[in-house]
Image (cartoon, rainbow, N blue to C red):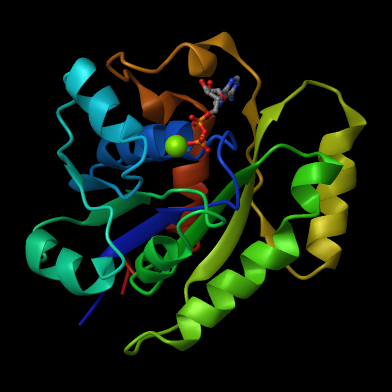
Length: 215
Ligand SMILES: Nc1ncnc2c1ncn2[C@@H]1O[C@H](COP(=O)(O)OP(=O)(O)O)[C@@H](O)[C@H]1O
Ligand SMILES: [Mg+2]
């Protein structure tokens, strides 16, 4: 049996572009021809849910901010989708919920700015992912992939942190998401042509390197 592509978007803290990334990644997956459902596991904010309602998205979004998400979600999704994108609360505040989501993940996508403060959070994120993955029922561990967001053109930081993180043995996706008004002002609006943005390139890279959909 091939598992559904399940991308969990996670980071230690709020304000790290998780929800924006979950929104655009889910639309880019849909744009790539995969029927996609998004899950808002951040019960404190419910930003993805409210964004989807205000923006009248065609992609279904359900709220499931629970620590037994890994037990509840499979019955709800019921193999009816090619891809599931889970937006999560900050690990630091809701570890149980995030760990539960990671138990279902084929990919854990960690959006972060290429800065020292975000870089210093990676070991903690990594150990949460490893601990959760060790407790899953079966299947291969999820792939952890870092994606740089809010990057500034021609800034040396992007290459510097890409090298550091790669040297630490983590995967950094090639495409980066720039610090742009189109993302800063996206909340509450419909998302058009996500496949034509950097998030489309990110999804394309994830899909070419995954065996899940090609096996
Ligand atoms: N690429 C980007 N460029 C500029 N602003 C961004 C970008 N991505 C997200 N933002 C803004 O950064 C803030 C935090 O993003 P959000 O997705 O809500 O993070 P989180 O879900 O991790 O709390 C929001 O105001 C959002 O609009
Ligand atoms: Mg959020």
